[in-house]
Image (cartoon, rainbow over all chains, first blue to last red; front, side, top):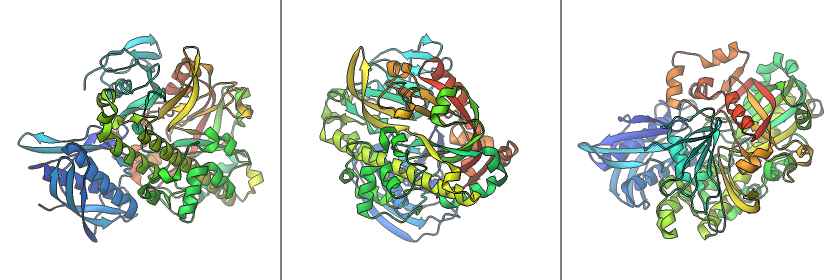
Length: 144
Length: 482
């Protein structure tokens, strides 16, 4: 299912850095919301104008959490290299060690997104993608 | 997260006794007993699992919760049987700080402070993804930066004075750097970021030398009461972030291949490889190249700052009399000789949010400072003060020649923003005579004084413990944030 911003997510307090968490009915939905939570942080409340859609595959990690980290690393590289901020996301395939994701992005605007976070990296520290009650919960700590 | 046990060694030093897979105890320098539920203490204990770790997993008094290593962590390993951990260096490889002294009195500059800051803000790009301080580097030029570090920038006219390179830790270039070990993605992220500040806790600050504690040392460092000084805090930008990111992603899933000791390491962010393994060597070669990028970055910003000061004040470089006091790394892993149990050993020292602090007489300290010890630069927060210290003999005996690196956060960014709601941090600082220019308002809330420990308390611990000696206190008058 394709999800677009805004989506529900939580900020996790972490002394020097910043955590994000999102829930979904399935691991795919929780991960898609986590990708969009990263997009919301990068946009800093500024609106996004979608200008590009792409599909990518990652083949990393030995469990779902590590594969989720790999997906977010790929999204963050797109931001760092091209200023691409995710505004919609669909997780097409997710299993330990592999994910295929389609994202729509909008370009970073230095004025509109001036309050966006400077995310250096997606860490492996306390990364989770696991069942939570009736659904799933995904979280990562970001180095900012 | 399970609480750790703490045993008092001194009022300023607490020990986490060995338990489980810890190979050595943890030792935490602290102003009073650390809160036992502080998650950073568990991280100190986790670092003690590293294969080949020597003596203790150490934490400086500005310790706070990081990822993998605590911020403020120091770990030395035997390179023949130990591990190198990219998480023990961090994403911002060779994030560091430098101090430039000038011949000007701060009082001369204060009436034109706004113009000076505005010129600096125009000339030194700041903020998220900041770029284009200098023309984009060609692949060949980037190779030269990665190999030569500060020397590359110095040779192209970015400097304060002739002694700049000698006044950088390691002479501004780490040996063993291999530009070919840096990936295309990392190069892509770095090619147009040389000479840029970035954001978060990075800053460019105009300070006044407010107080001298040790006159001979201050004289050796060229610090005079009332003089204008410049601090620059930044690192290896996107290039370094990418190097660390790729190294951890490569090592974390392969930990089990190196044996049970590696498989038992409790946090994937502590992913590591034997120092002598191909993966360990590849990381060290790329990390050294990224460290050199960071030195070149701070060196370019030094040149840009000197030119901006001269232009805005209508001075010649000779009138300004800028001179690099010193440049220290905060996030790095380096081969260093240290005496352990009476025997000199070559160790790989990881410093993650810690400063090298070599004492008097050490041949690795520049000749001009050797009698007093290496300058140790400890930035505080943007509303209070920073300190200049010098390395002391106790650091060589206790901490592999290491000291604290800053104030250390006490509030998360989220908590700080909540506390800043409805306030004008900009105005509050202006009322205290400090002008701030920042790219975004949010940064000022996240970085406000209350978000940090009082750095005076932090440096008092390293002084009591004999790790460093107080030399001077600096007070901010103008601050640029990303």
